[in-house]
Length: 275
Image (cartoon, rainbow, N blue to C red; front, side, top):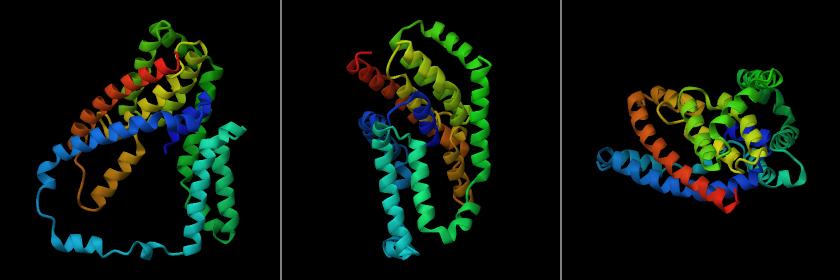
């Protein structure tokens, strides 16, 4: 669901199916808790009467009218199903998630080759080249030994303590992701999580990093995740802006609660895995 997850999974050889199964119970728990908190937080604005004409307008929308091309819609549904299955089962057959995505994308282009130029023109090329440059930077940091040096520093800090290492890799990356884009944080820290895991510190460190950068995308500030900035931009375009301070208040409360619960959950998983 997010590029940082794929980056961490690719570097640490984390099985996507294992990631899904491990985090699903935690996500359900966090969803239910967040739902109750948000309902309580916005109780005043949600308790008012809804404009009748707005409710009627929403209920009168026929979802099928939004499908411009039935063939393209059906092909897209099949592609999404194949993508999910490929991400979950591909690693068991030696197929990494990026290859699954490329195969599905190639399949889609073959079926709609007459629209290939249109699709390629709509690709976010600045993002593509940003990722290319980012991965090049990470490789350069590895070749110069900076990532290994940083890993040694973190290794000295955690001192082989599995509990402290897990909590450290939950909270520190989350704090960094609050002010930096979570993608570079993931790219730099993923090799370190792999090194610590290979040293036998804890088997859940890649999971801790995945959890941290996702939660860090909305704790303190919306700056850690591009999706947040897109949502804020759309809210402004619709003349119903999301106030920055409002985001910070509710995001920080939810983020701290999520990190606390997630830390306990990951320690429980570590105990089950014998880490």
